[in-house]
Amino acid sequence: MKLSTSVLLSLLAVSEVTQAMLPIHIKQYRFIKPSSADNNATKNEIFYVKGLDYQPGGSSGYDPDGDSDVLSDAEKCARDTFVFQQLGVNTVRIYSLNPDLNHDKCMTILNNAGIYVILDVNSGNYGENLDRSDPWGTYNSQYIGRVFRFIDAFKNYPNVLGFFSGNEVINDQKNYASIDPPYVRAVQRDMKQYIERHSNRTIPVGYSAANTVDLRLATYRYLQCNSLDGKTVNKALNESRSDFFGLNTYEWCSGSSDWKSSGYDVLNSTFSDAVIPLIFSEYGCNKNLPRTFDEVTDGLYPSTGLGNLFSGGLVYEYAEEANNYGLVDMDDSDGSITYKKDFDNFKSALSKLNDSTTHESHYNGTSLYRCNATAITSAYKNFGVSNFTIPDQPDDIAKMIKYGVNGTNVGKILTNYTAPTTFNYTVKDSDNNTINAKIAYNQTNLLNALKAVESASEAQSSGTTVASETQTSGNSQSSTSSHSSTKSKKSKGAAAHIGGPFAETGLLAVLISALL
Image (cartoon, rainbow, N blue to C red; front, side):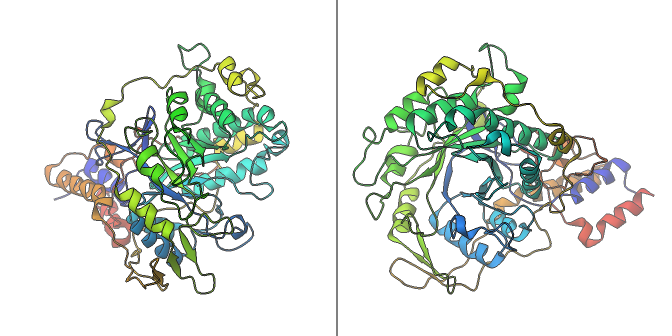
């Protein structure tokens, strides 16, 4: 029997995408993880970031002219993914990556293992960040073009939870707090416009704030505001606001701090008016070693602590460096990993958490927040509000947003790649015993794909058309050609990811033939 055109087109839409995790989206001040490809608000649950900061080798480990970064070596990624699973984390933050390298294998491994990533689009190298001492001179097409190439490189991975537009750009040194804020918003505006035009899904853009109590409060109030009158949303402000906000905070020190002495009680009250998700983008004071991470069980996550307001955090950091914050020791000579006591204690703390199940439909309020100069400068008097105006977008940046940057490296989750379960590195526990290491891949990370393929099969047998919602995907490669001016159709913040590598099995050719 010859298939109907509508059914064939539905199957073709399925063939263009890959099986993968469902991406996180935002509702008010919460991250939301879809329960299925249906993206049903009554079933979707709030998502808590239980993660760590991941940059083996530190800033010196990143070479913009090199041929590798921390997500380009599949064998090392498999090793570290196993460690992530043993810890019980669901998210990692990565500070410096090369947008011109291929990351498909590592991102596929992380995806299949159920690990989300938050990525800084900048690095510490010249031309790859907004220089806080010279924001007007470094906000240019060279820098923003790299940011756009970075977005292209990672936009199609559904396990990208979000991008950080900056890390501690606004700080209390010299006059940086007065001159940098409008430029941070300009960068966020450009990023969000580029994502809107060139990505098949909405990817949250956030900011990671400096560990200065008064300044971070002013920064938060400034970056989440989107209304001048407190009644209506201002389009320009909404476009340049942060979608989520990270705090780098080290106030709670294991064994010597509590809810009050750490200042967590102050965080709970002063940030209570949040309308965007809040996380700790860095935490884990190491004044007392080994760290016991009692802030995890007693402060950050429980509903009796910050859990009713914050959405978790990222502990600093994965691999041991000179600053003694590492959870593991990494032997540079052979690549072996040895757990530290900090690893055991952090794992234990995470295992004690019991998240309350709250669904997306519970959150029905507004995300409007008034831009109040008095409230901002009362927290930090020299903060650069600048009447909430931001720098004009240069013509060359506007053109890149309109036409794309024609990046040659656009990543995707691989369907013709078997993610490894083992690796050629030794992993030892904190007692120096070798661990029989094997990565576990939970099939629930791919169930959305199976559901969509089944829907296509049902459509074939019944003669109906697969719903268009299941055809929208953050995995399908969107065109960045200068000849393309069509915006990608997006679902509500989280595209449905459906599977079936039909093109590789020859089914695509069969379907095309059937149309003729």
